[in-house]
Image (cartoon, rainbow, N blue to C red; front, top):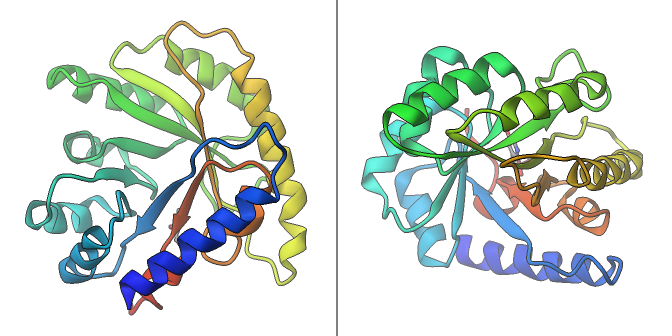
Length: 229
Ligand SMILES: *Cc1c(COP(=O)(O)O)cnc(C)c1O
């Protein structure tokens, strides 16, 4: 079943890609979001060729990680507190949820200790939702410049979580805005950063996100079914 779901999602991604502008044909990273799902379910997804795994909580990832084949790329997509940075840097290939210089500096310090260069994305809070993390637009350029100076971090792009709305078309203009921002950030002058990824879109809106320029989508429910909390 997980395998069938994965195939269906990949087909939808392909369809969405065809609706994009001709200059947007690069490959899409499909992150299988495994929070609240078991090691067995994750293994099924990996066996069905899921190559990117997304987890929200460090504790949960630490419990599952040792049991799984390491041959996948792990993405932290949930909020990161400074006291969990050490573990996060140990496990994750990408930390998508960086939204402050404080967390970035903590990541830099821990990555440096283990001779790692930690890939990160910066999470943007585009519409200033109180309930969400992420950096506000006006503070983004200076945060990116500051992060670019940290030698054990590689800044690779932006991440965005769209608000929950009834009419999905309401999120389309936000995705458009994020893509425009992504292109602007790509024009900024950096020393080490390479702005390659725009991570946006979840089960209910990943097709729209791709149509508007996402090249990383984070999909849980459509692959694994509803989560039991
Ligand atoms: C849970 C989660 C997802 C996946 O959500 P689904 O609706 O199950 O696809 C994606 N991104 C983040 C940040 C999440 O927390």
